[in-house]
Length: 132
Image (cartoon, rainbow, N blue to C red; front, side, top):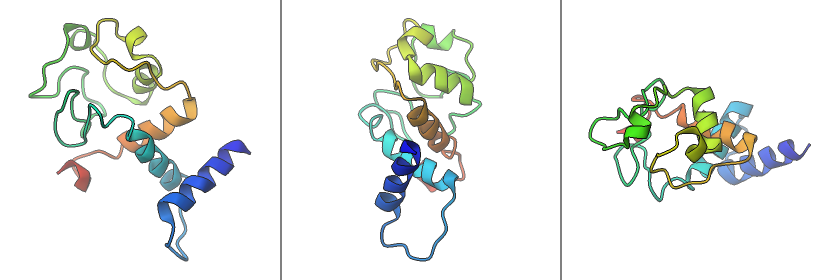
């Protein structure tokens, strides 16, 4: 019930003014994930590197391999390939998942928020206008 109320709030916040349009649970979760992503924007963006690496093209990419960004040896040597499962583990506890990473973020404890953020990150492909 609590999750449905949260989804309704996100739906109203993200799509207010849009009449007679049907939105799927996926749309709602992606919109929620985009909102959650604002917590990341102090260090990350979609299309270019900042303090942290860009997130466009993240899925199926080897951790520590985004061209033009200098990663810690801990991340580059981790052997992680970014998938839903590995991102969930990393976003839950980055410093425990990859000791020695420079990611100075304690993690996202909520599994729902992690899932929504990961769903949004999965949309950041070359086809997404945010990545251009």
